Length: 425
Image 1 (cartoon, rainbow, N blue to C red):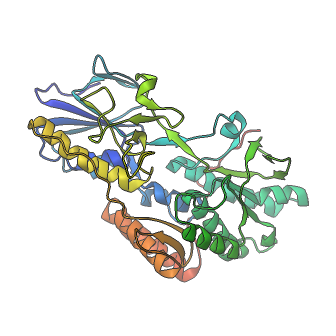
Image 2 (spheres, one colour):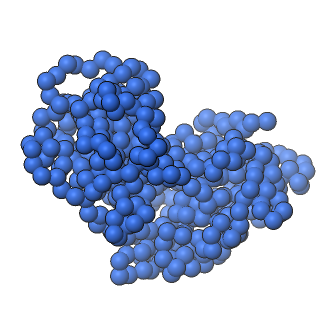
Image 3 (cartoon, one colour):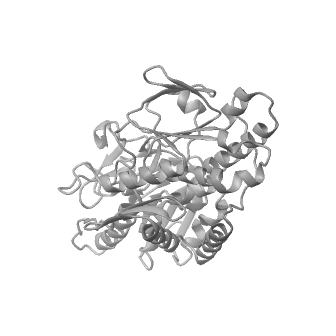
Protein backbone atom coordinates (compact mmCIF):
# COMPACT_ATOMS: atom_id res chain seq x y z
CA UNK A 1 0.00 0.00 0.00
CA UNK A 2 1.42 3.34 -1.05
CA UNK A 3 1.76 5.52 2.04
CA UNK A 4 4.62 7.87 2.97
CA UNK A 5 7.23 6.56 5.36
CA UNK A 6 7.12 8.29 8.72
CA UNK A 7 8.70 8.24 12.16
CA UNK A 8 5.29 8.92 13.65
CA UNK A 9 3.14 6.20 15.13
CA UNK A 10 0.60 4.87 12.64
CA UNK A 11 -3.04 4.52 13.73
CA UNK A 12 -5.13 2.47 11.31
CA UNK A 13 -8.94 2.69 11.49
CA UNK A 14 -10.97 0.05 9.67
CA UNK A 15 -14.45 1.31 8.87
CA UNK A 16 -15.97 4.72 8.13
CA UNK A 17 -19.23 4.28 10.02
CA UNK A 18 -20.35 6.16 13.12
CA UNK A 19 -17.60 4.69 15.32
CA UNK A 20 -14.74 5.10 12.85
CA UNK A 21 -15.65 8.66 11.89
CA UNK A 22 -16.14 9.58 15.55
CA UNK A 23 -12.68 8.48 16.65
CA UNK A 24 -10.96 9.97 13.59
CA UNK A 25 -12.57 13.42 13.96
CA UNK A 26 -11.26 13.71 17.51
CA UNK A 27 -7.66 12.94 16.50
CA UNK A 28 -7.05 16.37 15.00
CA UNK A 29 -3.56 17.76 15.75
CA UNK A 30 -2.36 14.38 17.05
CA UNK A 31 1.29 13.63 16.34
CA UNK A 32 0.55 10.42 14.43
CA UNK A 33 -0.20 9.18 10.95
CA UNK A 34 -3.89 8.29 10.68
CA UNK A 35 -5.09 5.87 8.00
CA UNK A 36 -8.71 4.92 7.41
CA UNK A 37 -9.69 1.94 5.26
CA UNK A 38 -13.22 1.33 3.98
CA UNK A 39 -14.78 -0.45 1.00
CA UNK A 40 -16.89 2.67 0.33
CA UNK A 41 -15.57 6.20 -0.04
CA UNK A 42 -18.53 7.61 1.87
CA UNK A 43 -20.08 7.53 5.32
CA UNK A 44 -23.69 6.29 5.39
CA UNK A 45 -26.29 7.59 7.81
CA UNK A 46 -27.88 4.17 8.25
CA UNK A 47 -30.94 5.22 10.32
CA UNK A 48 -32.42 6.81 7.17
CA UNK A 49 -31.68 3.99 4.72
CA UNK A 50 -35.34 2.95 4.87
CA UNK A 51 -36.31 6.36 3.44
CA UNK A 52 -34.05 5.77 0.45
CA UNK A 53 -35.63 2.35 -0.12
CA UNK A 54 -39.15 3.86 0.00
CA UNK A 55 -38.43 6.84 -2.29
CA UNK A 56 -38.46 9.48 0.45
CA UNK A 57 -34.82 10.53 0.02
CA UNK A 58 -32.12 10.29 -2.61
CA UNK A 59 -29.05 8.29 -1.54
CA UNK A 60 -26.64 11.21 -1.73
CA UNK A 61 -28.63 13.02 0.97
CA UNK A 62 -27.70 10.40 3.60
CA UNK A 63 -24.15 9.69 2.40
CA UNK A 64 -21.11 11.95 2.69
CA UNK A 65 -17.55 11.58 1.31
CA UNK A 66 -15.19 10.31 4.00
CA UNK A 67 -12.35 12.50 2.72
CA UNK A 68 -14.60 15.56 3.10
CA UNK A 69 -15.79 14.56 6.57
CA UNK A 70 -12.19 14.35 7.76
CA UNK A 71 -10.70 17.17 5.69
CA UNK A 72 -9.55 19.01 8.85
CA UNK A 73 -7.07 16.23 9.69
CA UNK A 74 -3.62 17.17 8.39
CA UNK A 75 -1.89 13.81 8.59
CA UNK A 76 -4.82 11.72 7.38
CA UNK A 77 -4.89 9.16 4.56
CA UNK A 78 -7.90 7.29 3.19
CA UNK A 79 -7.66 4.06 1.20
CA UNK A 80 -10.55 2.44 -0.66
CA UNK A 81 -10.08 -1.27 -0.03
CA UNK A 82 -11.44 -4.48 1.46
CA UNK A 83 -9.64 -5.73 4.57
CA UNK A 84 -9.09 -9.46 4.12
CA UNK A 85 -7.08 -10.43 7.18
CA UNK A 86 -5.25 -9.11 10.22
CA UNK A 87 -1.97 -10.54 11.48
CA UNK A 88 -1.70 -9.34 15.11
CA UNK A 89 1.74 -10.92 15.59
CA UNK A 90 3.25 -9.01 12.66
CA UNK A 91 1.01 -5.98 13.35
CA UNK A 92 -0.04 -6.05 9.72
CA UNK A 93 -3.28 -5.74 7.77
CA UNK A 94 -3.81 -7.59 4.49
CA UNK A 95 -6.13 -5.72 2.11
CA UNK A 96 -7.30 -5.97 -1.48
CA UNK A 97 -4.73 -3.33 -2.48
CA UNK A 98 -1.78 -4.58 -0.43
CA UNK A 99 -0.44 -4.95 3.09
CA UNK A 100 -0.11 -2.25 5.73
CA UNK A 101 1.67 -2.25 9.08
CA UNK A 102 0.25 -0.48 12.12
CA UNK A 103 1.25 0.63 15.59
CA UNK A 104 -2.35 0.95 16.79
CA UNK A 105 -5.35 -0.65 15.16
CA UNK A 106 -8.99 0.44 15.55
CA UNK A 107 -11.62 -1.98 14.28
CA UNK A 108 -14.93 -0.25 13.60
CA UNK A 109 -16.32 -2.67 11.02
CA UNK A 110 -19.91 -2.69 12.31
CA UNK A 111 -22.30 -5.49 11.46
CA UNK A 112 -23.64 -7.46 8.54
CA UNK A 113 -27.01 -9.08 7.97
CA UNK A 114 -27.57 -12.31 9.90
CA UNK A 115 -29.62 -14.94 8.05
CA UNK A 116 -29.17 -17.54 10.81
CA UNK A 117 -27.57 -20.03 8.38
CA UNK A 118 -30.63 -20.16 6.11
CA UNK A 119 -29.08 -20.35 2.63
CA UNK A 120 -32.34 -19.86 0.71
CA UNK A 121 -33.21 -16.70 2.62
CA UNK A 122 -29.64 -15.40 2.27
CA UNK A 123 -29.83 -15.90 -1.49
CA UNK A 124 -33.33 -14.55 -2.12
CA UNK A 125 -34.11 -11.98 0.58
CA UNK A 126 -33.53 -8.25 0.22
CA UNK A 127 -31.27 -6.91 3.00
CA UNK A 128 -31.00 -3.21 3.87
CA UNK A 129 -27.61 -2.44 5.38
CA UNK A 130 -26.02 -0.31 2.62
CA UNK A 131 -26.99 2.39 0.12
CA UNK A 132 -26.81 -0.02 -2.87
CA UNK A 133 -29.10 -2.45 -1.03
CA UNK A 134 -31.60 0.33 -0.25
CA UNK A 135 -31.58 1.30 -3.95
CA UNK A 136 -32.19 -2.33 -4.88
CA UNK A 137 -35.28 -2.36 -2.67
CA UNK A 138 -36.52 0.91 -4.16
CA UNK A 139 -36.11 -0.43 -7.67
CA UNK A 140 -37.76 -3.74 -6.83
CA UNK A 141 -40.80 -2.03 -5.27
CA UNK A 142 -41.33 0.24 -8.26
CA UNK A 143 -40.60 -2.48 -10.84
CA UNK A 144 -43.13 -4.80 -9.23
CA UNK A 145 -45.76 -2.08 -9.27
CA UNK A 146 -45.09 -1.50 -12.96
CA UNK A 147 -45.50 -5.24 -13.58
CA UNK A 148 -48.66 -5.36 -11.47
CA UNK A 149 -50.16 -2.54 -13.51
CA UNK A 150 -49.68 -4.64 -16.64
CA UNK A 151 -50.39 -8.17 -15.45
CA UNK A 152 -53.63 -9.95 -16.31
CA UNK A 153 -53.76 -12.65 -13.64
CA UNK A 154 -55.03 -11.97 -10.13
CA UNK A 155 -52.60 -14.46 -8.57
CA UNK A 156 -49.52 -12.90 -10.18
CA UNK A 157 -50.66 -9.39 -9.26
CA UNK A 158 -51.22 -10.46 -5.64
CA UNK A 159 -47.64 -11.74 -5.37
CA UNK A 160 -46.28 -8.53 -6.90
CA UNK A 161 -48.23 -6.39 -4.41
CA UNK A 162 -47.55 -8.55 -1.36
CA UNK A 163 -44.78 -7.10 0.86
CA UNK A 164 -43.22 -9.23 3.58
CA UNK A 165 -40.85 -7.68 6.14
CA UNK A 166 -39.17 -10.05 8.58
CA UNK A 167 -38.05 -8.48 11.85
CA UNK A 168 -40.07 -5.91 13.82
CA UNK A 169 -37.16 -3.99 15.33
CA UNK A 170 -36.83 -0.25 14.56
CA UNK A 171 -35.77 -0.87 10.94
CA UNK A 172 -38.66 -3.22 10.20
CA UNK A 173 -41.23 -1.00 11.91
CA UNK A 174 -40.01 2.14 10.13
CA UNK A 175 -39.93 0.39 6.77
CA UNK A 176 -43.44 -1.03 7.23
CA UNK A 177 -44.76 2.41 8.16
CA UNK A 178 -43.10 4.04 5.14
CA UNK A 179 -44.56 1.41 2.78
CA UNK A 180 -48.00 1.94 4.33
CA UNK A 181 -47.74 5.67 3.64
CA UNK A 182 -46.81 4.96 0.01
CA UNK A 183 -49.93 2.80 -0.21
CA UNK A 184 -52.08 5.45 1.42
CA UNK A 185 -50.83 8.66 -0.21
CA UNK A 186 -48.67 8.03 -3.27
CA UNK A 187 -49.47 4.86 -5.18
CA UNK A 188 -53.22 5.63 -5.62
CA UNK A 189 -52.20 8.71 -7.65
CA UNK A 190 -49.44 6.96 -9.62
CA UNK A 191 -51.32 3.75 -10.41
CA UNK A 192 -54.89 4.91 -10.95
CA UNK A 193 -55.95 1.73 -12.69
CA UNK A 194 -54.71 -0.58 -9.94
CA UNK A 195 -56.79 -1.51 -6.93
CA UNK A 196 -54.25 -0.36 -4.32
CA UNK A 197 -56.23 -2.16 -1.63
CA UNK A 198 -54.67 -5.34 -3.04
CA UNK A 199 -51.29 -4.18 -1.70
CA UNK A 200 -50.63 -6.10 1.51
CA UNK A 201 -47.87 -5.27 4.04
CA UNK A 202 -46.92 -8.10 6.41
CA UNK A 203 -44.57 -7.56 9.35
CA UNK A 204 -43.23 -10.76 10.96
CA UNK A 205 -41.70 -10.95 14.42
CA UNK A 206 -40.55 -14.07 16.25
CA UNK A 207 -41.05 -12.41 19.64
CA UNK A 208 -44.14 -11.36 21.53
CA UNK A 209 -44.18 -7.69 20.46
CA UNK A 210 -42.85 -5.18 17.96
CA UNK A 211 -39.82 -3.04 18.89
CA UNK A 212 -38.37 -5.60 21.37
CA UNK A 213 -35.44 -3.30 22.36
CA UNK A 214 -37.84 -0.55 23.47
CA UNK A 215 -40.35 -0.29 26.32
CA UNK A 216 -43.69 -2.10 26.34
CA UNK A 217 -45.41 1.28 26.15
CA UNK A 218 -43.51 2.17 22.97
CA UNK A 219 -44.25 -1.26 21.54
CA UNK A 220 -47.97 -0.95 22.23
CA UNK A 221 -48.12 2.54 20.71
CA UNK A 222 -46.16 1.47 17.61
CA UNK A 223 -48.52 -1.49 17.16
CA UNK A 224 -51.51 0.87 17.26
CA UNK A 225 -49.91 3.15 14.67
CA UNK A 226 -49.04 0.29 12.33
CA UNK A 227 -52.49 -1.28 12.54
CA UNK A 228 -54.14 2.07 11.78
CA UNK A 229 -51.95 2.26 8.68
CA UNK A 230 -53.14 -1.20 7.62
CA UNK A 231 -49.98 -3.19 8.35
CA UNK A 232 -50.65 -6.83 9.21
CA UNK A 233 -48.51 -7.77 12.21
CA UNK A 234 -47.58 -11.42 12.81
CA UNK A 235 -46.14 -11.95 16.31
CA UNK A 236 -44.66 -15.19 17.64
CA UNK A 237 -44.15 -16.11 14.00
CA UNK A 238 -41.00 -17.73 12.62
CA UNK A 239 -40.30 -17.43 8.90
CA UNK A 240 -38.54 -20.66 7.96
CA UNK A 241 -37.82 -20.27 4.26
CA UNK A 242 -38.13 -18.14 1.14
CA UNK A 243 -37.31 -19.36 -2.36
CA UNK A 244 -37.86 -16.09 -4.19
CA UNK A 245 -41.58 -16.66 -4.65
CA UNK A 246 -43.05 -18.37 -1.57
CA UNK A 247 -42.68 -17.44 2.11
CA UNK A 248 -42.86 -20.48 4.38
CA UNK A 249 -43.91 -19.91 7.97
CA UNK A 250 -43.31 -22.32 10.82
CA UNK A 251 -46.51 -24.27 11.30
CA UNK A 252 -47.20 -24.79 7.61
CA UNK A 253 -48.66 -21.48 6.40
CA UNK A 254 -47.33 -20.04 3.13
CA UNK A 255 -47.58 -16.65 1.42
CA UNK A 256 -46.74 -15.85 -2.18
CA UNK A 257 -44.65 -12.72 -2.44
CA UNK A 258 -42.16 -11.12 -4.81
CA UNK A 259 -41.11 -8.63 -2.12
CA UNK A 260 -39.28 -10.17 0.82
CA UNK A 261 -37.20 -7.82 2.98
CA UNK A 262 -35.03 -9.19 5.80
CA UNK A 263 -34.42 -6.97 8.85
CA UNK A 264 -34.46 -9.80 11.42
CA UNK A 265 -30.96 -9.55 12.79
CA UNK A 266 -27.29 -8.68 12.44
CA UNK A 267 -23.99 -10.28 13.30
CA UNK A 268 -20.61 -8.67 13.80
CA UNK A 269 -18.51 -8.09 10.67
CA UNK A 270 -15.41 -9.64 12.23
CA UNK A 271 -12.15 -9.94 10.31
CA UNK A 272 -10.08 -13.11 9.96
CA UNK A 273 -6.90 -13.39 11.99
CA UNK A 274 -8.03 -13.60 15.60
CA UNK A 275 -8.62 -16.58 17.85
CA UNK A 276 -12.17 -17.76 18.45
CA UNK A 277 -11.68 -16.84 22.12
CA UNK A 278 -11.44 -13.17 21.13
CA UNK A 279 -15.02 -13.26 19.85
CA UNK A 280 -18.36 -13.74 21.56
CA UNK A 281 -19.83 -16.91 20.12
CA UNK A 282 -22.82 -16.41 17.79
CA UNK A 283 -22.64 -12.61 18.05
CA UNK A 284 -19.28 -12.35 16.24
CA UNK A 285 -18.34 -9.32 18.35
CA UNK A 286 -14.85 -8.74 19.76
CA UNK A 287 -14.52 -8.97 23.53
CA UNK A 288 -13.13 -5.67 24.77
CA UNK A 289 -12.31 -4.16 28.17
CA UNK A 290 -13.51 -0.77 29.45
CA UNK A 291 -10.80 0.95 27.37
CA UNK A 292 -12.05 -0.74 24.14
CA UNK A 293 -8.92 -2.91 23.96
CA UNK A 294 -9.51 -6.34 22.42
CA UNK A 295 -8.79 -9.06 24.99
CA UNK A 296 -5.10 -9.96 24.93
CA UNK A 297 -3.94 -6.92 22.92
CA UNK A 298 -2.86 -3.52 24.24
CA UNK A 299 -2.65 -1.90 20.79
CA UNK A 300 -5.79 -3.31 19.09
CA UNK A 301 -9.16 -1.72 19.77
CA UNK A 302 -12.73 -2.43 18.74
CA UNK A 303 -15.56 0.10 18.96
CA UNK A 304 -19.18 0.38 17.91
CA UNK A 305 -21.34 -2.54 16.85
CA UNK A 306 -18.38 -4.91 16.51
CA UNK A 307 -17.35 -4.42 20.16
CA UNK A 308 -18.75 -6.43 23.08
CA UNK A 309 -18.08 -4.48 26.27
CA UNK A 310 -19.93 -6.15 29.14
CA UNK A 311 -20.68 -3.77 32.02
CA UNK A 312 -22.90 -3.81 35.09
CA UNK A 313 -25.52 -1.73 33.27
CA UNK A 314 -25.09 -3.61 29.98
CA UNK A 315 -24.13 -7.21 30.83
CA UNK A 316 -24.82 -8.28 27.22
CA UNK A 317 -22.87 -5.43 25.68
CA UNK A 318 -24.05 -2.01 24.56
CA UNK A 319 -26.92 -1.72 22.07
CA UNK A 320 -25.82 -1.80 18.44
CA UNK A 321 -27.01 1.69 17.56
CA UNK A 322 -25.32 4.97 16.69
CA UNK A 323 -24.89 6.60 20.11
CA UNK A 324 -22.71 3.92 21.76
CA UNK A 325 -20.54 3.85 18.62
CA UNK A 326 -20.10 7.63 18.59
CA UNK A 327 -19.36 7.83 22.31
CA UNK A 328 -16.92 4.91 22.21
CA UNK A 329 -15.12 6.59 19.33
CA UNK A 330 -14.78 9.85 21.23
CA UNK A 331 -13.53 8.06 24.34
CA UNK A 332 -11.00 6.02 22.35
CA UNK A 333 -9.65 9.18 20.71
CA UNK A 334 -8.89 10.57 24.19
CA UNK A 335 -7.20 7.31 25.14
CA UNK A 336 -5.08 7.19 21.99
CA UNK A 337 -3.83 10.68 22.86
CA UNK A 338 -3.20 9.53 26.44
CA UNK A 339 -1.24 6.49 25.21
CA UNK A 340 1.04 8.67 23.09
CA UNK A 341 1.48 11.04 26.04
CA UNK A 342 2.03 8.17 28.51
CA UNK A 343 -1.03 9.15 30.52
CA UNK A 344 -3.61 7.05 32.30
CA UNK A 345 -6.44 5.59 30.21
CA UNK A 346 -10.07 6.63 30.77
CA UNK A 347 -12.69 3.86 31.06
CA UNK A 348 -15.72 4.18 28.82
CA UNK A 349 -19.04 5.10 30.39
CA UNK A 350 -22.10 5.15 28.17
CA UNK A 351 -24.50 8.08 28.44
CA UNK A 352 -27.82 6.58 27.37
CA UNK A 353 -29.75 9.37 25.65
CA UNK A 354 -32.77 7.17 24.96
CA UNK A 355 -34.16 5.36 21.93
CA UNK A 356 -36.76 6.27 19.34
CA UNK A 357 -38.48 4.97 16.24
CA UNK A 358 -40.86 6.51 13.74
CA UNK A 359 -43.84 4.77 12.17
CA UNK A 360 -44.89 7.49 9.75
CA UNK A 361 -46.34 10.95 9.43
CA UNK A 362 -46.95 12.41 12.94
CA UNK A 363 -46.32 8.95 14.42
CA UNK A 364 -43.26 8.01 16.45
CA UNK A 365 -42.29 6.62 19.86
CA UNK A 366 -39.59 7.85 22.22
CA UNK A 367 -38.09 6.15 25.28
CA UNK A 368 -36.16 8.40 27.64
CA UNK A 369 -34.90 7.38 31.07
CA UNK A 370 -37.89 8.77 32.97
CA UNK A 371 -40.30 9.53 30.15
CA UNK A 372 -41.91 7.40 27.45
CA UNK A 373 -44.35 8.83 24.93
CA UNK A 374 -45.58 8.65 21.34
CA UNK A 375 -47.39 10.70 18.72
CA UNK A 376 -46.70 14.06 17.08
CA UNK A 377 -44.23 15.36 19.69
CA UNK A 378 -42.23 12.13 19.50
CA UNK A 379 -42.25 12.36 15.70
CA UNK A 380 -41.03 15.97 15.81
CA UNK A 381 -38.22 15.05 18.22
CA UNK A 382 -37.28 12.06 16.03
CA UNK A 383 -37.01 14.35 12.98
CA UNK A 384 -34.97 17.00 14.79
CA UNK A 385 -32.51 14.49 16.31
CA UNK A 386 -31.94 12.70 12.99
CA UNK A 387 -31.62 15.95 11.07
CA UNK A 388 -28.98 17.29 13.47
CA UNK A 389 -27.10 13.97 13.44
CA UNK A 390 -26.62 14.00 9.66
CA UNK A 391 -23.08 14.68 8.49
CA UNK A 392 -22.64 17.84 6.44
CA UNK A 393 -24.65 21.06 6.17
CA UNK A 394 -25.69 20.25 2.60
CA UNK A 395 -27.24 16.95 3.65
CA UNK A 396 -29.13 18.60 6.50
CA UNK A 397 -30.61 21.18 4.12
CA UNK A 398 -31.55 18.63 1.45
CA UNK A 399 -33.19 16.27 3.93
CA UNK A 400 -35.07 19.12 5.60
CA UNK A 401 -36.52 20.35 2.30
CA UNK A 402 -37.37 16.80 1.22
CA UNK A 403 -39.21 16.20 4.47
CA UNK A 404 -41.02 19.55 4.18
CA UNK A 405 -42.05 18.78 0.58
CA UNK A 406 -43.21 15.29 1.52
CA UNK A 407 -45.20 16.59 4.48
CA UNK A 408 -46.95 19.40 2.60
CA UNK A 409 -47.70 17.43 -0.57
CA UNK A 410 -48.25 13.94 0.86
CA UNK A 411 -45.72 12.82 -1.72
CA UNK A 412 -42.33 11.12 -2.08
CA UNK A 413 -40.44 12.53 -5.01
CA UNK A 414 -37.60 10.00 -5.49
CA UNK A 415 -39.68 7.34 -7.28
CA UNK A 416 -37.04 6.58 -9.88
CA UNK A 417 -35.81 3.25 -11.24
CA UNK A 418 -32.33 4.52 -12.03
CA UNK A 419 -30.69 1.14 -11.64
CA UNK A 420 -33.10 -1.73 -12.38
CA UNK A 421 -32.87 -4.66 -10.03
CA UNK A 422 -32.70 -8.13 -11.57
CA UNK A 423 -34.12 -10.91 -9.43
CA UNK A 424 -32.69 -14.42 -9.58
CA UNK A 425 -34.72 -16.85 -11.64
